[in-house]
Length: 461
Image 1 (cartoon, rainbow, N blue to C red):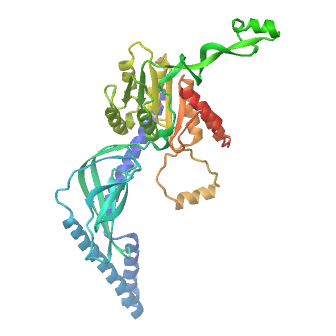
Image 2: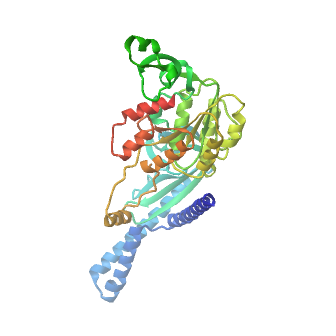
Image 3: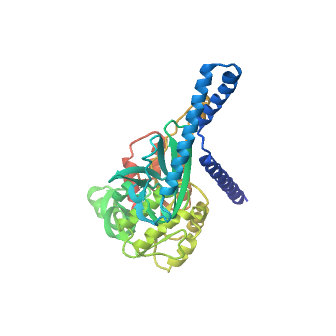
């Protein structure tokens, strides 16, 4: 009942968010077609009232001349913006060519689109933005006298449509008019691996006896000696050493690893999955999945085994965030053929509906399961007084951020480890593998992360 109630609350929150987003988008379209800016409305109001009250009623010539000049500027700005918008609309190609590009998040690239320049309208300024895909940063670069757009995308995925927003405004900021143009596109945007490319991934190795390695588990041949400790099994006591030295010595097993027969990796989609998708791509590029591997992602009906297919799956998973983890059980059923499988899951850093699907798989899993959570650093909590927080909310209106809180991440890691998984945290900013001990150190205010990094490297093996 609690789970159903929680899902209902989440669903109602999503519906409210979608409704508010739709209403905000419609209001934005109406505002774009309104020719006055806020400054223009204020100037028009002041000049109109001043002309009516002081100019006509009081016969104040100063107000009369000033108000008429202000109204004249507003009319000139409106006329210039209107004529400039007509010129831009006429200069735009009637049949826009299809935009095709394969790029990486946060890596700028230049398209073939040329922005019409208002050479005959010196009092006008133009601004180019992308309404879709969202959060794209557009800059204008001049090449051979032509104004071309330079785009930096912020989200990975496959996009089939580009909506440009061109705003013409006067230099005084009194009037503006925004035109939107839509064209078909084939944008294949991969996540940016950042510093994760240098992480020494050891995903294809499990605990075993084949390869001696200091990061492995103590399951190999017993080669080393150490002093006996209370609780050690008596059958591993080195009696010959005891006869010579009268000291109990324990035979210590060698730390070693074994290669897994098969590695199965799966990308779970959800809010905050950008860094995790980058970690999955970094593991693929580093060939850390071994020789025999399969890959799955939300939205893919069957396991994949080629790099191009995996890249496409990582991009398309961005459209499955509302159904995160729904295909995981089917993926496990397809790859589970009775042999040993090294299961590796890449999950979002924010809790959501995907967590229940992952927990259900962990409850039925008998083998080893490693979970990688990709992050982009930690958000530092800042304490503010209630009065200061009120003023910050009033004056600073910023877009909602998914910067990660270390306390929230610690709770998520704790739930996953309680379910029996080995959890690693891949920091895309610093290029380090972190563990729960590092989260504890962060919450305690400690900054010495070297021991935690070494511990995480052992868990990666």
